[in-house]
Amino acid sequence: MSTTKIFNKGPVSNFIENHYKHFNAAALLDAAKGYETHLTEGGKMMVTLAGAMSTAELGKSLAEMIRQGKIDIISCTGANLEEDIMNLVAHSFYKRVPNYRDLSPKEEWDLLENHYNRVTDTCIPEEEAFRRLQKHIFKIWKDADSSGERYFPHEYMYKILLSGELKQYYEIDPKDSWMLAAAERNLPIVVPGWEDSTMGNIFTSYVIKGQIKASTIKSGIEYMAWLAEWYPKNSGGKGVGFFQIGGGIAGDFPICVVPMLYQDMEMHDVPFWSYFCQISDSTTSYGSYSGAVPNEKITWGKLDIHTPKFIVESDATIVAPLIFAWVLGW
Image 1 (cartoon, rainbow, N blue to C red):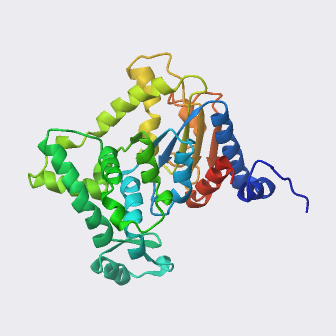
Image 2: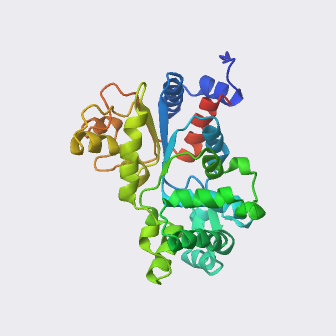
Image 3: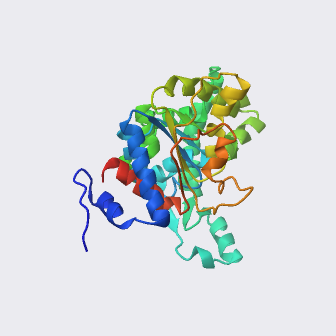
């Protein structure tokens, strides 16, 4: 069988080039080439993380994307924000359940009783992950609260990572933590709906108990206002691309900044997102955000007619690392 050799690419990329010819495989390769072209032509890229990508250890490729400057800003759920750090400090305590589809309600209850919270085939250990992080993050929250300071959720996470306090617990190679890579670069992050994460719930409990003021954490509205300032400053030239992993708030929140600026702020010179790719295993359907085709976003003032648009209907834990491998030249 004849194969094409791409001399500036590694074995993973060469495999993709030679075998991914049709259907979702071809869409994956097209999206990867589009991502690479966008960066080569001077564009910037936002990556959005929904689902449980941190627990799926996407950091193994995502961290290197951050270090090499292939990502300029991230939007993620509160779960992805915290679970990368939990994996960093408690990896050996995680429990894998390969037969998760066959678990009975009683077996699920037993996991709860043993302080394991299941995410598909992986159980996060409550004491070693949630509580270990909690005792350190509470001090940072409390210090800010006492001094009248306010920060975004990700900024508190950056503070704890950069302080070195967690190094004593590291259980994976730090280069595989995307949050650590982001903290070291001070990468911009927006975390819409942070309140529904575990750390968000824990913070809320301190507010209810009167130990911390709610205002010590900057809100989602403030995230949007910050993004509304960031986007025009960074959308010149080739513009900002949008690489969306999964659906939901991690993607829907930031993509709306363009129509908000254009329609509500009446800033009529705001460029559309200049590249768009969504990876989702939600099949195309009417009324499904995750399954909406990219063209639908034209009518909402998010994408232009000429914006390169890609959708890969497949499992993001498989697709995203392969696209990142292409962009990294692996």
